[in-house]
Length: 168
Image 1 (tube, rainbow, N blue to C red):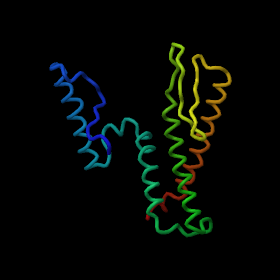
Image 2 (tube, rainbow, N blue to C red):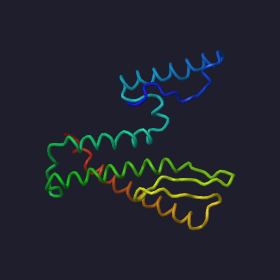
Image 3 (cartoon, rainbow, N blue to C red):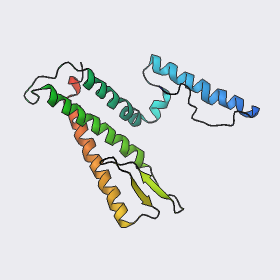
Image 4 (cartoon, helix red, strand yellow):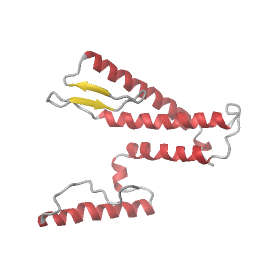
């Protein structure tokens, strides 16, 4: 963990009238979240967006499982450790696609003529969009969004199929 204390509400801490707010909203709430995660496994902030929390945590867990795995589930469709790791990779990609979908689902245009950059969904490049969007940009965004939904659906199908095999 890079930062132990990372306030989500930013106030000017040099002004005494903000000290109470900083203590109440940042320090106390952050401590409460740590306690809840330690004893429940999740905090009240995670409930605000369960889907986002799960798409953040599950890929990390599957990556760790992939690194530490000692075997693979037996059956007709998986015959080697390499095949099992490819399936785990597809699950990871599905959850990563879900995260990209979530990050762009509430994304709206500004009223000014700024350029927008959306992280790449295919191949590591970034796509720049101007405001207002051109027809080509709308088509490209739709294509990338559809690609992410396909990746997500494939990953979720495998996740459901092998749910009871996600153990080490």
